[in-house]
Image (cartoon, rainbow, N blue to C red; front, top):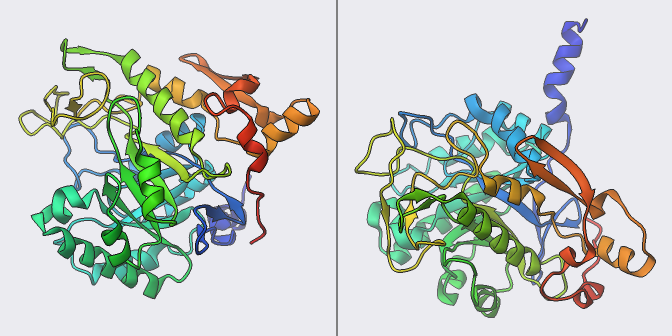
Length: 387
């Protein structure tokens, strides 16, 4: 039987681990954690239950045990939120499952800046905190209060400077819709890392090339993916969602900064679970099928069916895309080099084969490590550096 001392020790173990923030190096496109380049296999997480609305209906604490397990079983190592997580118990659970957080500290322009310090101080020493985020596709929403572009950007840059005033360890990212223009990147000098939300069917086109021409700062996909509803035929289409999830995630991995010449430090699928509050013409008590079709958008209907984006349903029933995503392993360039040169096998050379009945480990064919580029590019891959 555990006594009170043992229970106390177990409760503080996450806090005994030193902070493991992302590290950024000038002129280096990679993000480092504990001296090792990071590739994010992530999801966006906004757990609003039936009948609730964002942000007041957010229930991080109530859902984290179940959701963190779902994420971990799909191989997720990073999660992004749209509001700050300031409850250490939530971060404890993420950390127990090997997941770090891109913690959005500020996105809505009406939020008072004096709230930032309290929220930063609450969790800045937690090892699950990877970096802070200021803004979400704010070039589209004007910091959610229809601010002019540069005014919104200046506000978020001020937020980033404020965060760094109280936390000297963690970098600050900002999430733009599409590749940010060069003048925006230069103007927002306090932003260390750029994320991009991008939806254009089954490819990112020349996004990686365009960003690389504008900045050497680290880059990742803040949102990507497809929803599970097909507005062309008014039916659920899990096969199309799974197909898009596979192709887009593979394209991100093929452009990983882990490889020589790669610029992308991973991506975060939108999203873990369905949300039923997002159709303004519907009810948060039911799953509605309203959507918008701006002329570009997700596969296959180019329509944003807002309440159907989850890898899992609101009740946390996995869709086909969940199992496809779980099968895709984070790139491991040095393991590939070892296998190609010397043969053999290793745990990292295996992958999960996931079905509704559970996940098992099966050998991973060598060609899956580099399905498009071929395997020649990995021999120039950068070595992990010491912190």
